[in-house]
Structure formats: C-alpha cells, structure tokens
Amino acid sequence: MAYLSEDLRQQILAYIPRYPSKQAVTLPALHIVHDAMRCVSHEAIREIAEMLDLSPAQVHDTMTFYQFFREENAPLGQTRLWVCRSLACGLRGGDALLETFCEKLHVEPGGTTKDGKITLEFAECLGACEGAPAVMVNDEHRHCVTAEKVDALIGELS
Amino acid sequence: MPDFEPVLLKRINAKANPWLDAYRADGGYRGVTKALNEMTPAQVIDVVKNSGLRGRGGAGFPCGVKWTFLPKDHPGPIYLCVNADESEPCTFNNRILMEHDPHQVLEGILLASYATKASVAYVYLRYEYGVAYRNMQKAIDELYANNLLGKNILGKDFSLEVYLHRGAGAYICGEETGLIESLEGKRGWPRIKPPFPAVEGAFRKPTVVNNIETLACVTHVIDRGADWFKTIGIPPDPKNPRDAGSYGPKLYCISGHVNTPCCVELPLGITVRELVDRHGGGVWKGRKAKGCIPGGISMGMMTEAEFDTPLDFNGPGKVGCLGLGTAAVTVFDETTSIVDVLYNICRFFAHESCGQCTPCREGTGWMMKMLDRIRHGQGRKEDLEILDEVAKSIGIMPGTTICGLADGAGWPVKNAIAKFRPELEEYIRAGQKTTVALEMAH
Image (tube, rainbow over all chains, first blue to last red; front, side, top):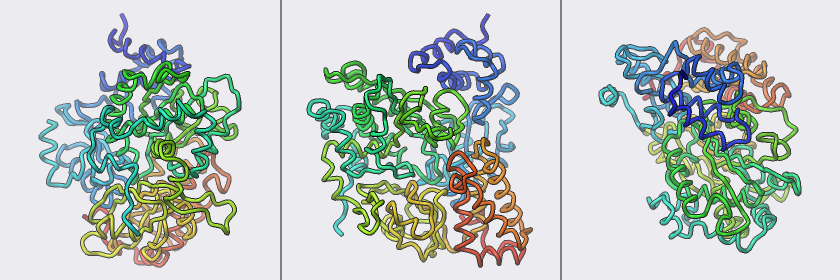
C-alpha cells in the first residue's frame, strides 16, 4: 500500500500537465506533502520520485537545498511561527522579539513546543517591513508584533 | 513640484475592489483589448521599448530591449517567468501590488506574453507571500472564467496559460537563472551565462524573466502610450551616451527608523531626504539619521550627508552605492551602531549564499564571523583591511562567482568601511560596544 494517501497523490499528479518536465513538479509535490504531513519522510520522497520519474536522490537533493522542508526526524508542529530577523525588523527589535518568543515558548529557533502546537523559526526578510517587527503565522504576515503582543499571539496559536 | 498622481498604486490607495469586474470598470484590460485588436506583438514591443521602461527588479535593464533578444521566428514554446520572489531585504512593493491589485499585474503578464509570443507564464512567487498567492490565484481563476486566459483569448489567435509556482524560502531564487533552476525542480543554483535565458532559459527554451512591478508598468505603458510614460521621471543624461534614462513611476519602500514606514509611488529621481522626511514622516523619536540602505541591502550604504542623492538609475552609483536596486530605503538613526547593521547584513548573506561558488560561500561566512567577533568587543586592528579585501574579491565584478549575490554581499561592507571608518575603528579600538546595540534600539 502506498505511503501517501490517494488524495495527496492526486493533488501532486494534477500539477504534471502544467510543466514540460515532471521534475518541475518537485517543489509543488514537496509543498503538498509537507503541508499535510508536517514533514517529508524518506518514504514520501521515494514515492514522489516514483511519480515524477526521478531518483529519490534528486528529490532529496532539491528538498534539502531549501531549508524550508522538514525531514521526519524534526516534523513541524500545528502552526509554524516565523520571526523576522533581517534589517528592517532588526532595527525595530526583531532579534529581541525572537528571544522573547524563545523564552515564552521554551524552545530554540527551529524547535517545537512540547504540546506540538507551535514550531518557532527565525526568518530572513519576510517582505513585511512596513510592519516591522513582523512575524509570519504559517504563510500570513502579522505586522508590528511588539513585545506586549507576544502573549496574545501565543494564546491564539495554543 | 505638484503632487504626483500615483499610477500603480492608484486603485490600491483608493482601497478599490481588487477583483475583475471592478478592475474592468476602472478601465482595466483596456490595454489588452487594444493590443489584441489593433497591435502586432512587434508593435507592443516597440511601444515598451520607446517608453524607456527599465526593469524594476534591481538591474534596470530596458524591458523592451530584453524582449527583442528572443530568437526570431522560434517555433516555441517560449516562456515568461515572472519574478515574484521579491527576497531582497527591506523590499515589499511587489507584495502590495499582488495582494491588492492582482489584475494590474496580470494584465502586464498578458501583454508581455502577447508581445513575446509566450504560451505559458510561470509566476515564481516566494512562499512568504501567502495572501498574494491566494489573491493572484483568485484573479487568475476569474480570467479563465472570462476568456482572458486559456485558448483564444477574446476570440483572437492568442492563447496563454498562467501558473503560480511557490518558492521555498531561498533568496537566490530571485536571481533569474536561480529562479529557472528552481522552477525546473532543482536546487536554485544560478547558471553560467551565456546562454542567456532569452536564448536558452526555462526547460531549455527561450525565456523572458520580468519583475512584477515592471509588468505592472507595462499595463499602463500600453494603455497610455510611451510618450505619457516619458513625462514621468528623469530623461537620459545628455553627457552620458550610455544612459537609458530613468522614466516612469517607481514604488519606493521606506522602513527602519522612520515614523511612518510605507510604500509610496513617486516619479523616479526622488531624493532619499524627501522620501524620509516627507513620506516616511521623518526619523523616529526626534533623532537624526546616521545613514541608510538605499535600495535593498545589496546596494550598499549612504551616510546622512548623502541623502540628497536622487534615487534614479544613476544617482546611487554617484555616491559609491551599487545601484538603484529595489529602491527600498531603510534608515538607521544616530544611536545605531554600524557594526550591528553590518552584522545583520552579513548574517543574511552568509545564510542565503547558495553555496555553489566557493568565494561567496566562504567569503560571506567569513565576513559574518569577523563582524560577530568585532561586535563582541574582540575586533583586531587589521580586521577592517581583511573585511575590505574579502568584500572586494567576491562577486561577478572581480570575476570570482557565477551570480551577483556576492557583489551585493560585499558592497555594504565596502561602503561601511569607506564611509564609517572612524566609527568602526573606534569600536574596535575601544574593544566594546560604543553605541546602543541593534537589539536594544527599540
């Protein structure tokens, strides 16, 4: 029996007609699996490779270039919370904000809370500089997250 | 100067409905109707060429000229890759266009595809722009439902598919050949050029890569004409035969230590001072500016004394910056340590170097480590010379790397050493933090 569900497989296969090469479906496929399963396991890599007529090594090579994707030894929690540390945010307290989140969530950047609710990450520029310091909840920006807003945001995500 | 009336942000500033019916009611897709009914693809290229529109992604290459580099009478397919990776730090203008007025961008994509005979447009969109992704997809769905995408658009012999392709958080994928490699499902390693994408790009076919803001400009160039576009901005310098001018409106981003960080549309050629004082609400907390990053962090640094520099395609170069870049100005105030600013910048490039070329992979990491040491009070007298040497020896210009990432990584370091040397020397000599650390400056 296949490791990836039929639904995930169909979602991936639906991308194939968009591109002249199946390899171009690598990133969409990784996103689909990663969103649903919170990591891309070796078995998932093998099945993606099979669907796209690639070697698992090719999929793995692409996947690990983008530090975005988690392998099975470090799956994501329910919500991925990114704190921007690049210049525009850094000038308005981004590094300190990241430290505050680390302290309150009792995790280092990259880590997931014990209850599995939040994975904390540092981000390089999110492109939300008019709202610095900015964070991103999954793929949506939150502007002007000052220290006093940290507790409310954590409460919302827990 | 009378107040400039925004073009690209007109509907966005008015908080207009972003969807198709409202966009059309405001005159949207008039340019596409005109082009498809009255103009040949070559005529569209000519208008864009005559407008003097230069790429807004950073390099400033004339847009219409780029389109003419495609091989003549190619059997196809030809691809348009839309660069919506916008990963240059401190830059967010493309995000605002895609989130709030996606059809303005899509109209430019249709026009560019018609002009270049592209049959598929891939919009390579950074993952971090989730709202933009969903709004662009909704707008694309509307176009398919209204015969403005797909087969025989508006009943004409022009068919186009547009697909969004999400990135995965890599700065290098904003470099046009890194983008193409990433689109193809590989690591985003830039390619050695030539061949240029126009000859051999995505899937080894002729490819045009254009930035979102550039394409939004194309929408208005076709609607209103090349002459109108040239009434905005700065004409070519008559003393410089190679200058292509700085025509048209530009979206300037203002961030950092200003009272009102924002994105504002102004004619090319506005000065940093006017941006900061008039549009950014002045430096925050009643302080003075120490300097700024004038066009994304890869363009280098300006001191406060250089704030009267016009931000057009020539201005920043005259004060030693790399170029206009993305015209994203980030101000740091007088209490900010240059060491902290530089460390933040060097940390970014060390993290985002793709690792393909050794001088960049090692050089960016080395610069970051040196800055980290300096910032912790363990700088050495010779460090500035070493930093300067590393910064000058990595990049396309010294000929040691494939792409320009390392040029951008070195530029702020070179500029800082040239422009803020006394402060850096004093910091190293004192062996401790001489000013408020970045982390504390909020």
